[in-house]
Image (cartoon, rainbow, N blue to C red; front, side, top):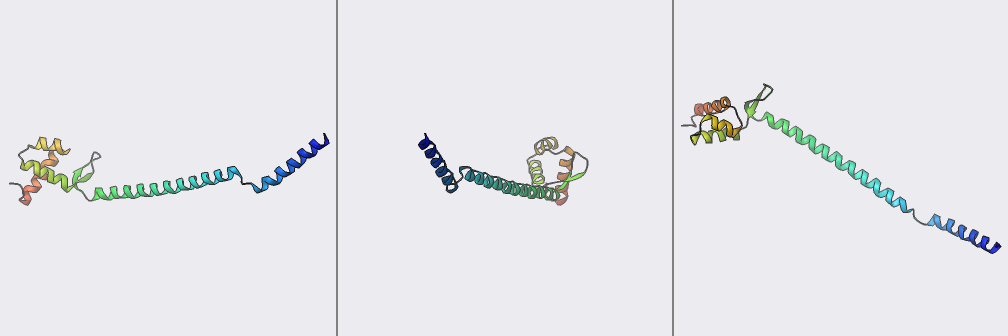
Length: 124
């Protein structure tokens, strides 16, 4: 019985000493989780930065348009491409209501654009 106790005690001392030299299996896992969380935070920061830049570009982009009133009553601008589409449809002989429906503008806005082109001498 004494030999068994001494053997178990020696085995436990060997395991205890061995535990200092072995790597912590959860240490690597903790490091990986830390790296992933740091990477996620960095990516989230970059995404927020890109979204902020896009929002600023959208706000600046609305300043570069010419002449349309928004639903809130303030004057917002109609982009030159839409004006050219209105002009093209007017050249094809479409009436103001059809042009308004196709371009998502009001009839008054379509008339204003056609009038503007006529003043420039571009519509016959």
